[in-house]
Amino acid sequence: AQTVTQSQPEMSVQEAETVTLSCTYDTSENNYYLFWYKQPPSRQMILVIRQEAYKQQNATENRFSVNFQKAAKSFSLKISDSQLGDTAMYFCALPANTDKLIFGTGTRLQVFP
Amino acid sequence: EAGVAQSPRYKIIEKRQSVAFWCNPISGHATLYWYQQILGQGPKLLIQFQNNGVVDDSQLPKDRFSAERLKGVDSTLKIQPAKLEDSAVYLCASSLAGDAGGAYGYTFGSGTRLTVV
Image (cartoon, rainbow over all chains, first blue to last red; front, top):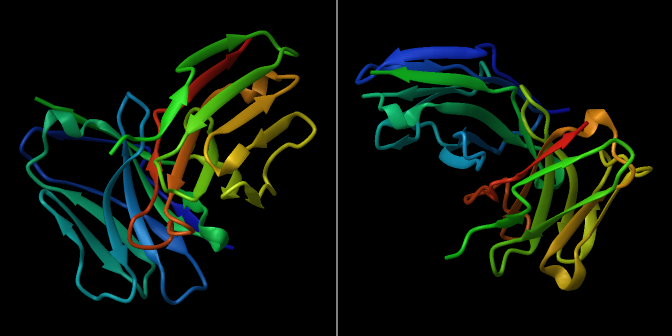
């Protein structure tokens, strides 16, 4: 069965600094996607970035990038030049069979001015 | 493009009462999901529809929860009778047919926060 583990319940970072959120997962699939979602207080889950497992190149979306280590089953999110609007819960997610998403327990990120 | 619409935004009920949540997915999205997110946890799938058929309801407590998706568009999730442990955020999401594992991921609604007292 697929599992997703986020070992950092809370993180904090100063505005303009860089922070890395960790995620490990387990799957028996060889081709799959991985996702990072952001959940602000408004509760809506917003897709931040996706990674295709068969691509060796790490995905990048503006200030957000991932460090994808397929062999180690690790998928960390790096946020550069942190902004106050980045304050939110961040969830790592992995599709399981039937395309449902398996989520980790989340990391609460607080960006301080 | 309009997003996934959910209502109500908040609901407070007493235990043993019933409650219903409504979801309108993005137009053209064949797959609709209901997730339960208990405080401090990640969302967990309750039920998945493909058009108006159920794909996965293995985690749905069928003695008290029910869901339907009429005409393959809107969906309603009902709890009857509610228990204290049902207090959670109920998120609806939609995707192109079975594409949650592919290029587009899901689009989520803003959820309904249910408090059972």
